[in-house]
Length: 178
Image (cartoon, rainbow, N blue to C red; front, side):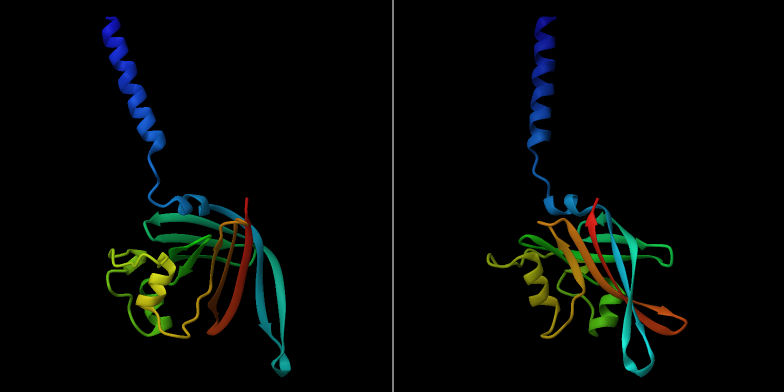
């Protein structure tokens, strides 16, 4: 009986140690999930071509959907929108990029080379981060990007456009993780 108890304890400890030591496939992604509290800036056009900025409190809930894709639910008292972004590690940051049809509409071509939804085809060079690899394989010189996560300061920023009555409005969210 003591032998069975000893074997059971050994098996339990072995499983516990291996589970505790298991390295996460995407350690940064676990750190970016959560709620960010910050401001949403709305650039409003005025007569004469000048603009003013309306700044309001806003929240962004970040959820990992699957490897390479996050969902961003951004809301405040005037706005409630949800969108998907591909994410790529870049040293102490995680940068984001449009995904699927939004990528094609922005840049004029589809994601290719197996990088759909942030996936990689194991063709990265040793000196490349996921972000640099994405830029090298998927973008042309001058392509614009709209934000990401600063892992040292636990912040998220993202600039985006929404249609309001046929008029495109630009917003920028900047927030700190709770």
